[in-house]
Amino acid sequence: MLHRQYVDLVESYVFRAKESIGILKVMDIGQAAHIMLIEHYISHAERQIDQIRRRVLDGETIPHNEKVFSIFEEHTEWISKGKAGVLQELGLSVCVLEDQYGFILHHHAMEHQNDVEIAVLMVSEAKRKFAALSGCSFDKGFYSPENKKELQVFLNGVVLPKKGKLSQKDKQIEHSEEFVASRHKHAAVESAINALENHALDRCPDHGILGFKRYVALAVLARNIQILGAKIRQKELKRQKRRKRAEKDRYSLAA
Image (tube, rainbow, N blue to C red; front, side, top):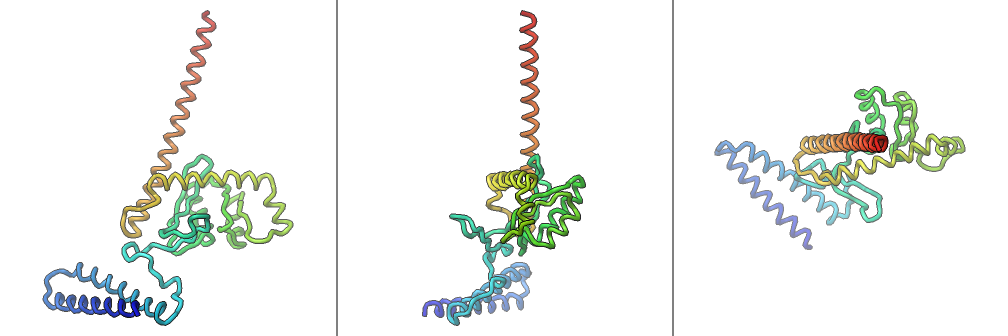
């Protein structure tokens, strides 16, 4: 069987690599960092050999938490998008909290986390930096009864759509004018996500989880500067229009 032949071949390479490392350690030629790196990749190879044997040769299903999707960027995760055309992606999800003016107040790299686990964290961290934060709108993925209860401690207005079938009381809440208006405003966060992706955050060129987090933070900073510049520009354009109207009015009076 080809898989068995492949595994046997790779095992022979791993064995030779270990022999070479043993010789280098005896020689003590000052290559400790390089040796550690090679040993790190050997451990990856041994894990892959084990999983190939279990999955292909023994027919075992490998638990998701044992899978590694990149040996170079080990923080990479399998992301189920659930969207038409893009069902899955490889990467790391980032949650952003945006205010009504388009500024990103807080962001969080979601390492082995899902939406429901970080709802309270996002608000508590943003509230710590921006005490005036009084309300927040979420997607359904953030909902849990516990989250709703805890969020109401931090916020006066919690717009958190419930998953599944709605009770009569829930329908009244989610069909209320205030709730619907907040949900419409919530859609604006999609523009912030698209802007971050269009400004190179769809692919991170830095290495390691620290490099990823640094790159994300810089992208968020750049987005906020862009929003600030756009608002300053809009203010300047309005000022110029007012000045032109005033000059026009003066000419009319003079005539």
